[in-house]
Length: 137
Image (cartoon, rainbow, N blue to C red; front, side):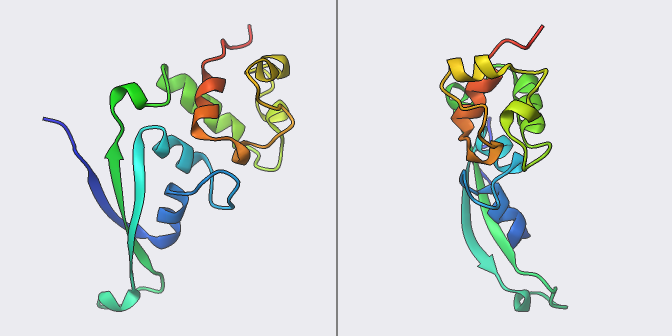
């Protein structure tokens, strides 16, 4: 009837990005978009020697477990995706600069998010709060 969980074998670095936490070098758009919908678990590494011919990279197994509908981070998936994409568009810029024209600095401050911080410092829940702000006219 519905998917209980999914398992994938991917390049190890991709799995690390999928499961990354805020404030880590691997945390980005992929992390936020997946963790907004799934519980992401790194299970184990598969060494190159497990394959013939052996690749030049490690692989890893990841489990994605869909979150219950009431725990999914967004009300409007398109708005959420747009805010996340824009926030990470230029990684070294602040939210104030990346979200200019989409969400005002005053609106960010009103929900307790510092417009001077960078996207990689925000949690998935923070992104959900940003996406819930009405767009600038």
